Length: 122
Image (cartoon, rainbow, N blue to C red; front, side, top):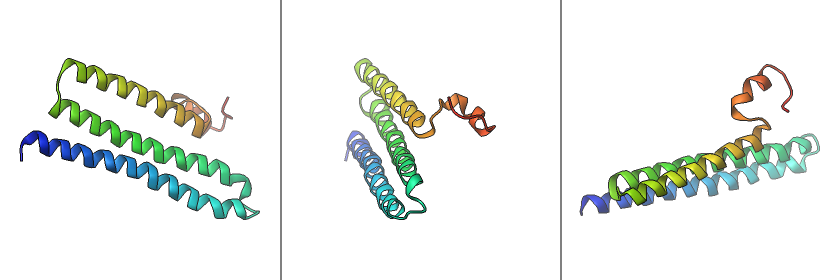
């Protein structure tokens, strides 16, 4: 088996792991949220927790998929076009990550210190 074939297989495995994290993480978020939504004592916080857990699963899956893209670009297809494509993909995924973090936490990542200190998010 040639080096490129091995790396392509590794990239496919890493991509499958990233997708699996999102699917299994999302499913487990729902499995945890349903009983909490049905119980009167935890009903109010169930939706917020579900969104936070879904966001975490998506973020982790996106990070793993970025790793697969970087491996593919650097070790298999190192051309100007592939590097530009990787840059575009990474920028889009970074923007997605930031927007998901803002959705989950209600505050920009660089302003978290205000929330930790006790100020309400704006």
